Amino acid sequence: MTYKLLEACREAGCPVCRLEQQGVERYLDNQFYENVNSPTWRNKLRASQAFCHEHAWLSVNKRLGDALGFSIIYQDVVNSLLKQFNEAESAAQVSRRGAPSGPIRDLIEKALTALSPRKRCPACEHRDQLTRDILSALMEDLRTPELIDALQDSDGLCLPHLKLALGSAKQSSVSQSLLAIHRAKLETLKQELAEFIRKNDYQVIKEGFGKEGDAWLRALGMIAGARRE
Image 1 (tube, rainbow, N blue to C red):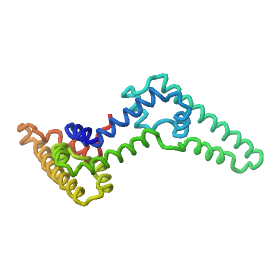
Image 2: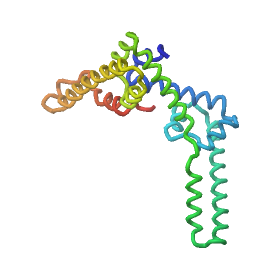
Image 3: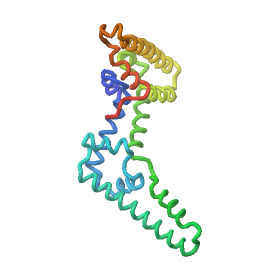
């Protein structure tokens, strides 16, 4: 993990976001390749109604699964939903005969239950565990000069991952080092944003932009986390 962290620090953006995204993509690619017909995985996907919005479209956009794999998975989900709707309709008809005061309400309540996933998106669960593992390795290795230097030279952690990292810290010296690195990065970002704003004034816009030209994008990445492709 140390080598992966060092490599990620050499790239733009939060290194934890980068490793997290790479790990999720590998997970989805492997699941589509190996487990589309696995009863265990299909049961889990029925319970979660397949994937959340982010990971469903990530799988499509990155071509982590093919059309047949998606069809098999989502046929299961659609069949499960229709089965629950039919059961809800049957229950509402029984209710209509026995207690005519609230059959529509009963139908809607049962439909709402059917529309609510019973489990989380499996890719989200995998991502969260992966994030914990990455941050654990980061906080352990942050005692080494090599990773400290790499993190100082990087764009730093985004705020969501910085918060998680500090919350998992076991040694105050590591927390202090992490805070010092990111305070310096925020100070630099503050100056670059101010310079970008200044250079947007019509009186000085001819000066052109330097490193501050993409400061607003880096600010988004640091505050909100890396952009999901």
